[in-house]
Image (cartoon, rainbow, N blue to C red):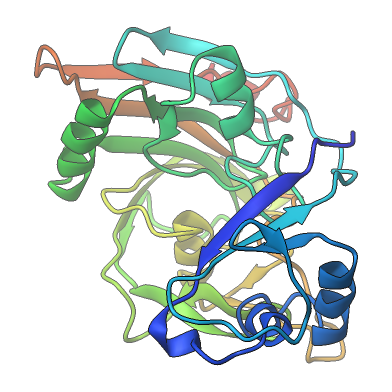
Length: 311
């Protein structure tokens, strides 16, 4: 589908004073070359203080820039989501695999954020994220007071998120904990990517075996994450030597394939192929203070060989 386009605002800081308009965009938005930015500016897609500008105009501190990106074709995604719980403060939604939560990577209106705000109101925001290929329960807040309350609860680790994951191998213990730190590491296609990093942020995943599948050399796991780092479960299970079945990005050791080896693929974080499902989420309700738990049944296309274990 083609979206309606989008206006990207910027305010010129002291550190950018003296740059030309084209140089500013080439410096801060490296997905496009300076020549491409010059073409956009010359065709009137960039405004400086509300007026058309030229690539060579010099910027001063406080200037306002707006890039009016024309409508573009977004990749197709599943746009249907289910509301599991709603009141005036929170929404718990069932996100389908393949639908991004936030804009980025060519997605704007084909995102859960956009669709939720269309159905409900513009104050709705996700409290946490799910990867594009991850399905299941995600918590949205509906006002700033609730957002502050639940962000504090998350910082205090009072929000419990439980996932189902299909991992490679069957030799793991019945229960184990992974506490490998996670942080940005160099990555060929994106400059940096989150992965195991000795100097990263503390991260904890508690893992329990639900069912071993020896004929498929796989295991269905329940994973509870007190912390919520980007791609945490994928990184932690690969770090432990049991990467998700079909994960195109993370290899044993918790580091990504970067496409540099002969047999390696240069995948991106949004690439799918694995099964990871946000199964349960428990959180303190902002009005009552009591804990609520919402369960999201696995999707209908859950592989039949593991379906009886979790339904």
